[in-house]
Image (cartoon, rainbow, N blue to C red):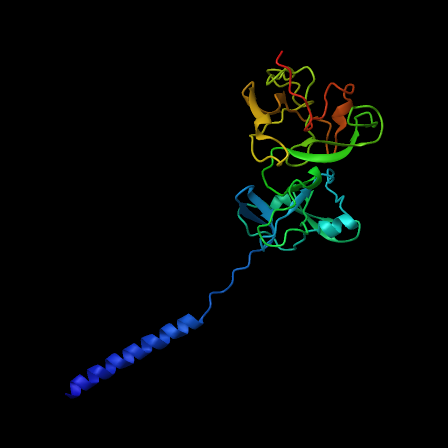
Length: 281
């Protein structure tokens, strides 16, 4: 009888111990994990996009061709700047691609691949992407654009200014760059999906290098069907509307578009949304 009483007492103690242990565990809340710095967040429509650590979408501005911010005053009220001193802890963000600029007003602003980063005031909640395509000059930030658009003054290798029609004079032109803001050109004598410039030994590739890229993300205003890829003596070259795309070797810094005048305007035009399809023959 005594043994039965002891047994029942032990059982009760064990049950009470388990109850309090479980209750204590339930009272302990899991720590909130806070992401640090720039992040990549999945979007059904756009794929992986750049956001802050709370999931708010970030954007690129086409006017920022040279890597400085062209959004000030009233523009900044609509497109607030993004800045974080924290290094990104997202595995998809290459730390070497993230930079900081000091704006004319003294504020700091983060950049990605040289593009200053902004919020859009009409994005209320994390995951909102209402700013893409606004004015044809604002695009959701991404890490893998094959082509980007910039709005900038054309200044040839001869230091003269050119308009969109390659006539001398001031004027802002929208044209294509790679994802790092480096200007892209077409070669006027080329044919549809046929590079007629590059030599088999690539001895002239330093002057007008192939734009070697796979077809990745594109700004929403560019139709995917217009972008392709050809093989040039074993190397891949990106095309737009059949035009093989090139760099100009003398464009040494972001924002340069010196090739528009070399050797004369019209031989190596910049490429833009309205560029007509390359001729078949």
